[in-house]
Image: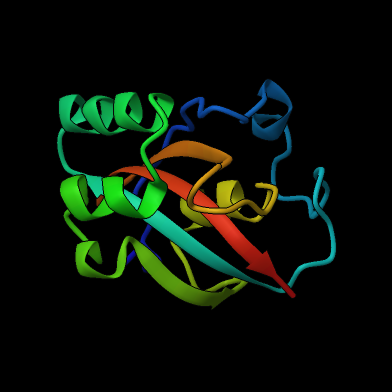
Length: 129
């Protein structure tokens, strides 16, 4: 899971992440507005090399949940599912990236990367409300 912590994080570039995502600081703006909760999945890897292997599988068309089962060090049995999370309930770096992502499916994921105090995350969002 990605609970709150004060670790400094740096945003990576996922398949659909843009440089614009990293520009906002503290504001509510962004491409996707209004959602107060998201249904989120992630792949957590302690090592950068393992995260890169997982990204390669995703780029080659493997479903997100299958990659999570193989590579994630958190929630692997659930295909990386963290379930519904509200704003303020996640690590700030993770949350900033996750709430900016467009919704997608595990078969055709739109994902982004972020580094937190827990390791390297690959994040996708399945729903928002």
